[in-house]
Image (tube, rainbow, N blue to C red):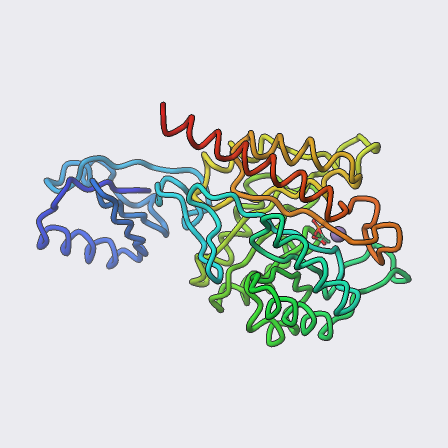
Length: 339
Ligand code: PEP
Ligand code: MN
């Protein structure tokens, strides 16, 4: 249930409403906006008399909501969340470009790619150290050493780093990672999500291969319920009957999530398609669809990449693409401002 207060509510009346609700076991999330303050009531609200609350002098309106996610819900928090990462931000009208190799292979490789993508406008370096591979015989990533190499690349370029955690025991190693990625396969690893909620590093949650929007938002809710509101969502394609592409990119996720939640939405056309030549058109479509950023795999030698070479762009292709994406994003922002 949400309670929308009139502007400048009487303090005493507000305090007595809050303590009355708290006595009933309700937790209150307060969101202060320019015009109105909104109280998000979490708990068993079925016992509350909606008409009684609506009749109070300080109350403008009361709405029951069905969605089981409260912290992630736009109804409770109408303003877009902006996640601050290093000197950059995700959300709030910016276009975040996360780019880098699927997996970190060596210092030379990751530093060279980091420099190249930075020149092309990337705002974050994305690389895998711990890799969730379908086959146990495939390259599993450099692990802790990979994280160290990402930090070397960060020192060299200043780019914040985004990298995937696979299990709770790895958390101490991620203390100074800028954005902790939860992969599609771990989207419902609830213990991991709870642990990520108890720390304050930003968390990017990729959509599970067959997760509904609501299931995905409930995963965000796990992190937020623990106290960490720095959550980013990443659409990376879902499993459908189509096998030509690695997954099917669900572009509707962008406007749907923007309606349901205030969290920023990143799109990953690389894992969604599995094919380098499809990254360009789908990245363009995602920017046109209003995403807050993209995650794109870039490799200096895709033919010899240890992981996901076929979907990786060469730095030159990434450079040509980002020029157009940034121009498209600027154009759309100007149009919006003019409307
Ligand atoms: C990745 O981002 O490298 C990855 C493994 O992606 P996903 O979890 O979306 O499959
Ligand atoms: Mn990959």
